[in-house]
Length: 159
Image 1 (cartoon, rainbow, N blue to C red):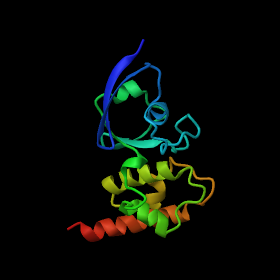
Image 2: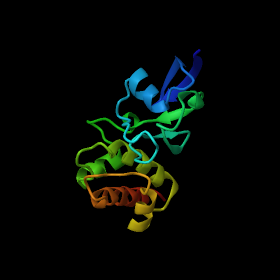
Image 3: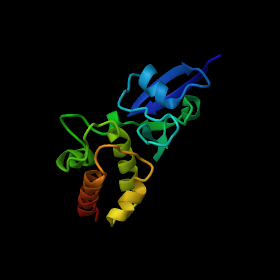
């Protein structure tokens, strides 16, 4: 048995028939070829699979694709392009906020959610917001610096 779903991902409408047990992470990666969403722990602990669904960061490895029916989803592919990075991606590059890159898509998506919702006035606030995302390489310092820089830019452009 399959269930028909319709989702808007990165501004593009998709219609598909999916198995009821198919995870959103597998739908994104295997069905649609959007491999920027990484699958790490498959238990919602590491945050590598984080996407934005209807304005909120969500673990796609814990979300069934059928639950996303009718939703608007943003994946890391929807943030910018190599030629034109968005502000947070640019700051990750400038601040050296990545090493192996495995956690980076989830960090970027969580960072986007944090920048949209919170003032992020201190590094402690940024660290608290990132507490659900794991990185084995960086020690988080440069990731925090990148989000801090993006927050500063956001604050400069917000009246």
